[in-house]
Length: 209
Image (cartoon, rainbow, N blue to C red; front, side):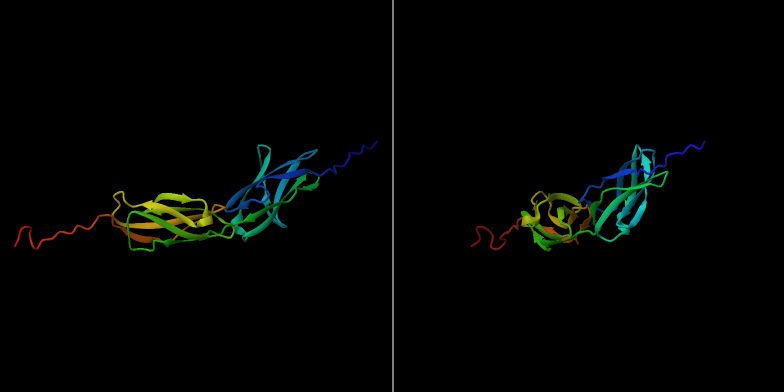
């Protein structure tokens, strides 16, 4: 008597849990997925379009892969995961659309452009990025003096120079985009001068004819 062993034809199910659909990604990103099968999942492989990103490792019931996004060009990537079982059945996850952004923003201080400053000075900058600038942080001699998170009316911060800051100082601005990329502007040197000029009459002297 030959006993027939039922053949396993049930594919695994798999779902990407991170990154989220519509997310901006940059640098090294961890892709995670959950997968299940009536017998057991043997591997999960991740793809950007039709290109394999590599096979994940199983940790705590979650399949994960550290993906270096800098190996691909900026733009849209359609992520999928394929889970396979011991019988070579394969299941494919729903697609997750992400945008690769490894390009840092541009930023430049527009005012002041140098020279002498005194009192309260407004430092302004221009910044741009393909996927939007998130914030611009301003620095004096490497120390932050404020962050502007709303560029609708331009990027700026007020700097009070009256607190014993007379002398030469270096201004910079750091722009950060929505993906976390950042750029530092070229430095601008200014000289703070809040000490008033004292005028003394030496001739003629008081009481002189």
